[in-house]
Length: 189
Image (cartoon, rainbow, N blue to C red):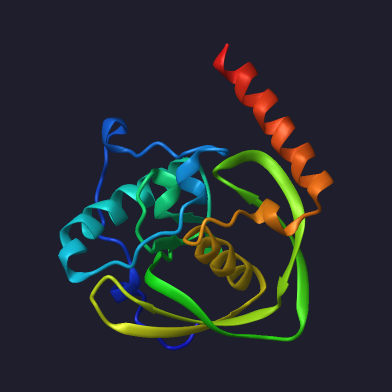
């Protein structure tokens, strides 16, 4: 990450009880395939409340990233926290976009809170540059590689209705979706 003040990127520190936590939608829920609308100033209050609740849901899951459509909200909003050195380092991305990517590719195993228990190797650009607005309203740019690069790309794709399984062959995608459906049926019993 460049020299950004992480406090300006962070979610407000809010202790949420279990009743206030958001449920995470599971594929094939149709909201996960919807293209999200940009966040505007009219959404400021909703976004501030939503961000705190999204971090609560993500940490509880546990996960390292979550996009608004995963909690049923069609806004271009995502959160990330790789928890470096086991310490919270939350990043809020409002209206994020990838503005540059490397020609070099990298393969990394990915999973998704909306496809619980399903993992596959995904090939993506090794490095990206992302532009976004932080929770304080400042426009930011961030360059990333490694896990952060993959996580940012994964979460931004959610905002366009794209899931990590869309990078797989039809056969692999169908196997994962059938396995997920079976596990969800068994869980519901």
